[in-house]
Length: 344
Image 1 (cartoon, rainbow, N blue to C red):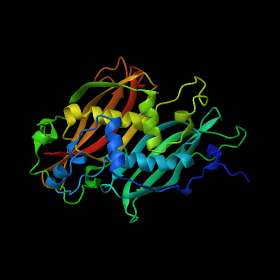
Image 2 (image 1 turned 180 degrees about the vertical axis):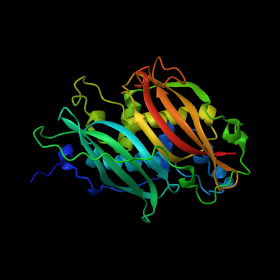
Image 3 (image 1 turned 135 degrees about the horizontal axis):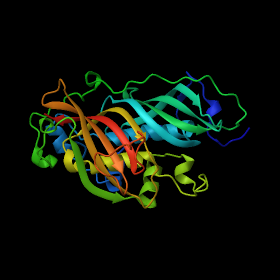
Image 4 (image 1 turned 90 degrees about the vertical axis):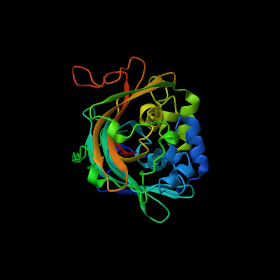
C-alpha cells in the first residue's frame, strides 16, 4: 500500500460524502503578527485589545480572515490538492470570534458534482465547517472547485448542482456577544465615517496598490498550509508559472479597503465570491468597493453593511466589473460579496 497521498481526483467524490480534515491548528499572536506583516491590515478591532475591550469584546479577536484561511487550508489536501482552480464561495457565516489560544479543525460535506464537457475535470461543491476546541461552530461556507480527473474514461457521475442562496439574509448574521459600538472611538479607528454616511450604490476607490511578489505569496500559502500544487509547483501548469493563492488576494484587497472603509470592522457574512482571473507575481493589485445594502442589527450602535470588494490589476477602473458580453473584465481578479459590522 502506498504511504503517500496523491490527493483526491474528481471521480473520488460522491454527494453526501463527509470528510474530516487532518491536523487541527492552535492559533496564537504569531499568526496575527505574520498576517499584519503580509498585508497592510489596520482595522482597529483586531489590532488593539484596548479598542476591542471598549467595544465590549475583551481581548481583540484574530482577524476574521485568519480564521477563514486556517479552516480553508485544512481542507486543501482533501478537496483541492489536484485543483485546476478554486471557483467561488457562497453562504458563508462567521459564528463567533477566534482568539489566540483557540484550536481550529475543519470538516466538509460534498453537496454537488458536475463533470466538465471536456471529460478531463469536474466541479466539486463542498460545505465546510470550522470548529474550535469546544466543538463550537466558528464559521461555515460553501465553495466550489474545479478538480482534475484521474482517468478520462471514468463515467461521469450524476450531475448535482446545489441551489445556493444569492446572499446571507441580514437577519441570519451572527453579531458577537457583547459587541457595542455606542462608545466607538472614530479617531482611534482611523476614519469618521459611520454606516449612515454610505449610500447604496456608492463606489469607493481605495486608491492604494501593492505589487505581488513570490516571497509574500509563498509565505502566505505556507502559513495557511495550503498545499495545492498550482501554488507551489511551477511544473504543474503548462505556462510554468505558480498561481497566486486566491486567499492572498482576498486578504490583500480587504486590507487595501481600509482606506475608505476603516470602520467596516468585522466580516460576518460571505454572500458570494469569484476568482475571476488568475494573478501572478509581478501584478500590482488595487481594490474598489461598492455598497450593496445596509441593515440594522440588535446590538447597540452596530449596523451591517453589505459590500462588493473587487480586486483588479493594471487597467482596472473603479466600478468597471464586466464587459459588454457579461463576462468579467480581464483585469478583474476578485469579486467578493460580504457583510461587515460597522457603527451606525
